[in-house]
Image (cartoon, rainbow over all chains, first blue to last red; front, side, top):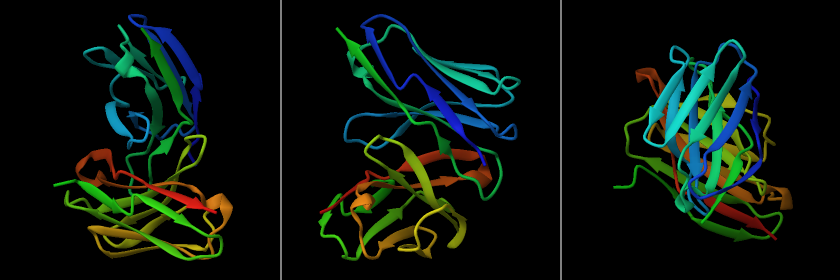
Length: 113
Length: 114
């Protein structure tokens, strides 16, 4: 089955700096890669996703890159703000019935002002 | 008009008791899930149902029994609760058949076993 590794487990940055979180996956058939943000005491919420036919996707201050050959994907947050502080999860899934999103172990991002 | 709602939000109980968590979605999705989030924040898939049929059953003790009376509801019953069952349980739904892989999560049920 799929296994997703995520690094780092914690990340502290100053407001305005960039933050990068990296994930690797094991199942070469996975083709959907979302990122979820979970604020303290809240539910995980999708912030951006990418499919395997695309190498990069950007939405304002966040971007995701995918290297299918290396089975790596990364989340980039630019111009970080205190409200970006949260736990971020990467995940991977096959586009196939009977499969579920498999999550990485999460990265706790702290943005200090 | 909450998309995925689960009850109760908090559940505090003694070891050995039996408890249930209910989940309902009004998004018209065919697929529903239960995820467990432990104290280290790890989100782990437990079960998935597609149109009332169990399609994913990860390595979960058989004290956990999901039930889906219809495709809008997925409940989780836990027998003989143990200390290690303490966690946040999230219900979620999606519509993979229409390319909608996005998971919509409920607000979670924080289960504390004393």
